[in-house]
Length: 270
Ligand SMILES: [Mg+2]
Image 1: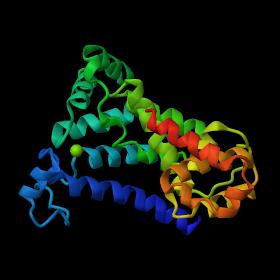
Image 2 (image 1 turned 120 degrees about the horizontal axis):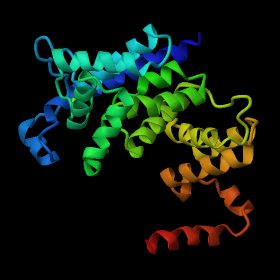
Image 3 (image 1 turned 180 degrees about the vertical axis):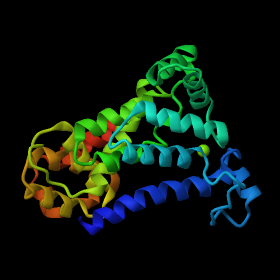
């Protein structure tokens, strides 16, 4: 197995758990000013967790989902729900209202997806919390080679507690980003496929390459070269600005100044 891939998979879970633990002490303070007041020297270290509660909800539910994926050899909503319910009853530190309500319904005998639907119906205004994206990453690691199952399992793990479409598709979006960050860019059989095109664009924006370097690479990487490079070029230009375009390309582009002006006019008219 590619050691770079292994390192990135390990890093994905470690980063999630570290970020969660680092942020717990400031979670309820609200503003940057309030946080500076409470922590005048800054927040640099992971505060030790309370006794008998090693993980806050974000990390706890993530790790339980990961363990379930391994032991069930895939995604099993009933098994995941059972683990989450058990954790809620013995610990439950940090659990959100939507998650608690859904897991309580499951504990009382509702089916997992039925519980998520009921909670959304009870309170549609408040059903789009971030509880489904905080814990979804193990799905990206487990199904990195199977895009359809990655998307399906990402949305299903969300729907157990957060059936709102912003939550289910938010989890799919996070896991697509993780998948693309784990892997090199060209895959057979995905030429012209929209999700792959979006993934490529995000990969290049998040990997320190210049706009020129990224687009030169994509034009020679095979697949749907012109569209992949176009979408990536838009994101890179949005991140780095017009000075990222090499002067020779500005000369070679038909109507470069008019195109730039159109961009300026659009953002000014917003
Ligand atoms: Mg939390």
